[in-house]
Image (cartoon, rainbow over all chains, first blue to last red; front, side):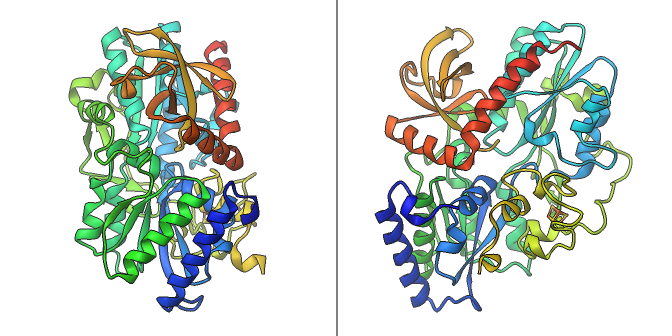
Length: 377
Length: 93
Ligand code: SF4
């Protein structure tokens, strides 16, 4: 972690920290009775730990790490399906690096590659398109995963493939959306949340209005935030200010990147290529209504689920997660990573048992790398 | 994967398919600029996410974001992924 004195603007960081402390004191927040603030985005989780914000802020503020790391919420069954497609003869399976080490029941994509499957790590779905152009005799499949930040890129790639009439390119679509799981969390009577830090780059695509229901229907503040430490501190202060004033609103701290109504080109591409699934399975959260996307019938030729007959709701029976993992409870903030019996024993970044240990955006990997407030004392 | 990285859009590669050359932390890569093509993106800074320019940003914002991403290790990771992807394009089956 960094010390506040090393921040780009230490004076601002200190001023924000002390303003947060004053507000938290005025609200009577303490370690025993903290205010719970959920950061939805895994990028924010990483930033909070990297800069030690969890240790620097007033002890009456407790961060709950939300389900915003797309790799972490991926059920094992989806990884199994990736492996199954990748092992088909003639297939080149392409994926972002993050997904390579996520464990499946049989193996991860990394292990499938070691076993001879042609799995390639790409930076962009455009690389998968290029592979399809260069290898017309092979089937190139791109693993489309991620939230609304990534969804436009696969949508635009499918449109491009359609324009070119590429017949050997398809997307294995496992895209998910941010607002629906937040609603599921808010409907959970066991969840005690006082406010949300909204995702920055997702909101750059969708704008701020998809969060209106959080303030309007559930009476909770949400502030869309950037990734710098002072962005996060400022957002926390904005949330506390709303709580203190008895208000709940959607506010935008990251207006320099996030337009109120999102990015129209991205939204149009998403709408053209994808439609909502009736429901989708999330690791740790179970089935959530309308939280996943699938490729519209008009782009069926580019849908790996159609091409290979594999995918969500096509797999024979739901496959259970591994016993002894507490990923689900950690995911929704009901347990700290260190409270999982596997933490540091069966499960470490070198040998991840659960996906929360794989990605730097996962809460378990962040705890492992940076430690927690409790451990620091 | 979820964070964009700032890059400077330097020239068109193929205007018809909205592909332009970007420089990201010293690495050049063709990116799709469809989402920011409302105004001429050449010479501007953009947040680039998995090969797509997603938002135009000013130079100061680009510098601040890059610094945060370097701290997080995400800038290095993005550049490594771009390099690894170039290899993946060549790899023999
Ligand atoms: S320590 Fe491993 S098994 Fe336990 S919750 Fe974290 S990722 Fe899951």
